[in-house]
Amino acid sequence: MDGIKRNSTEEFLVTIVTPAYNEVENIGVLYKEICQVLDPGGVHWEWIVIDDHSSDNTFNLVAEIAQNDPRVCCLRFSKNFGSHAAIACGLNQSRGNCAVVIAADLQDPPNLIPQLLEKWRDGSQVIWAVRSQRSGEKWINVCFARLYYWLMRNVVGVRQIPENGADFFLIDRCVVNALQQFAEKNISIFALIMWMGFSQTSILYDKQVRQRGSSGWSIEKKVKLVIDSITSFTYLPIRAMSYLGFGFGCLGFLYALLVFFNFLLRIPVQGWSSLMIVVLVVGGTQMVMMGILGEYLWRALDESRHRPSYIIEAKAGQELKTK
Image (cartoon, rainbow, N blue to C red; front, side, top):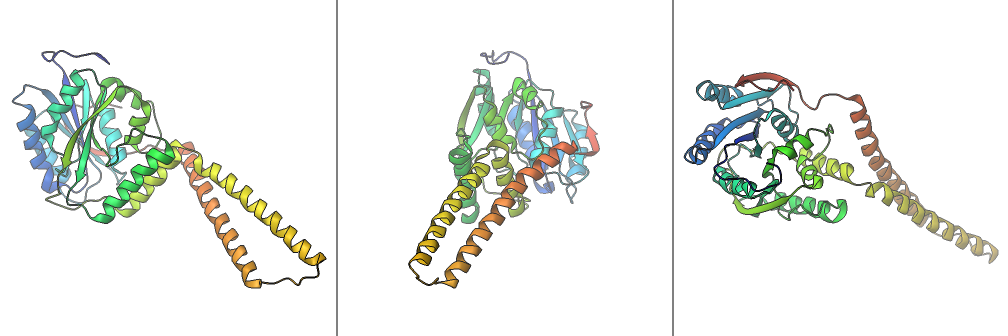
């Protein structure tokens, strides 16, 4: 079934993976919308919700839904490991011929899932739902997002990433299996899927405004995602450090020649303030370079520990994989 056109009458299972953090106001509505979209078409589906250690009743609500619907299950993390770890966990547990990843905040409409499935039936292995616009978001969030995607395309080199981003997607079973070969913890799973290749396509949609609850996507997490994405896919910052060091070395040599010639011409040394500026600029640059190198070294150390990317605290619903 991989990479070929699939018959629309062919029976298959679709896994829907939803990372959730404090989404008790939205998760029940999302479940109803998934049922309304997929059940009339006779689609066989399972829904795996990963509760990223919510402080509200998200897990209990999904557990209640699972008691009445055997297609639903929920796993709760022992602490907040992040949405990317939650997505990886859900994909590891998936049993479907394909998997759809959709957030719990209702900003990504479930009624797009049939369009994603249609593209999948035509043979595409990765289908992205690309935002045509980001309605209702603060300008600072929009600017941050555009800067991130620009960096990923033009600096990191993952050129498949669209300008407005995409975190609602469908992937084929062969992509899920390939993704499970990666054990990296500090990484953007979206960028990794784009980097992996396969047959990729996209559809456009308007991202909805969040109606209930608040996002747990803090500035801290956004900054970490940027650093993780850069360090995972390029060594350019380290190469830039070498170039910068070479440039400062050349400037220092030229300045030394200037001082030497001034000495021969008996011109007194001037500008202690300028000397202090040079020391501060060079010293500050060196500290930044050490910080960049430290980010790479810390991630190498973190991977060498072989700690799990997530720990499951509780399960509810259908029988899940043991992995």
